[in-house]
Image 1 (cartoon, rainbow, N blue to C red):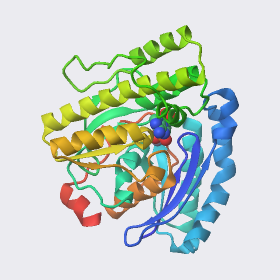
Image 2 (cartoon, rainbow, N blue to C red):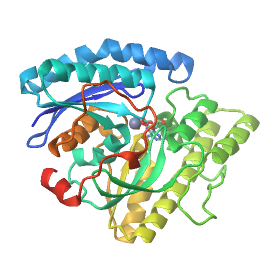
Image 3 (tube, rainbow, N blue to C red):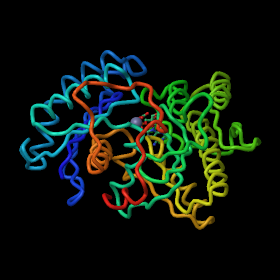
Length: 346
Ligand code: KG4
Ligand code: ZN
């Protein structure tokens, strides 16, 4: 079975083809960074227009890369939500139309399920059940994953998402948009002992997160300092250290509470090297297996949508002819499959 996956929920246009028998056959990505950079953040209308411009050439490119014809494709998966409504509509309309023209089923994929399952695009693959830490620009969630679709949210942020806190702090440090990866780059040159930021909500029991206080603490220090290169690096380092320690302690707590044997990290912030290192150390100590997506599939991409869509199509699920998107969509609203069904098709 060959599934074409389309991602267009925010500022990346991704198209890929996944085949469970052969793995990922092709994957192309266009990032809109240059379009949004002058505005310091994503401009939704510009995002929609650029997705519209890119989708057809990217789809042709991905078919050529895989040496396939439209008739070889067995299903079309597109991101149905959550995300920017206009951007989602472009991808959904495009995907649904392709499926209708090719007379193939179409499936609307939950963007966060795509992220959650992205580690299955690498080797070795995790096995269910596992604890997942989903850290992206819009979400920070600890999830008990029993099987595909069986998601119990154990903890989430009460305010900013961790990627959002990275981006806002990066902007204040003058690192521009998108700032997360740039802040991480600066942090690797910084002195961790010059500044100290609070570790939000670590003194309280439970698995909830809060990052707006940390962001404000960083903003106060940034305002009080002359931002030379060394100071930017030192602030970035202190900020990243506070985030990484907070996420690591919460993951350890959730692993102890649930006794789950495996931890999976996904979403854009899972690309962060300091987070990867800290979680690796913690999991080794706890005797827990740890899985990350391949680096290219941490941030938004078409491959994760092709993979998640393929799993659901194989389990007999598909969407109707109407073009529908869900800009707000909880993971717990998804159709569940049993661990047995998931094993059958992985
Ligand atoms: O998953 P993603 O591509 O988009 C959403 O679904 O939100 O995540 C993007 C987020 C951004 O906030 C970006 O700054 C952050 O992931 N990010 C990073 C790194 N790479 C991307 N944050 C910290 N360190 C990184 N290396
Ligand atoms: Zn994402």
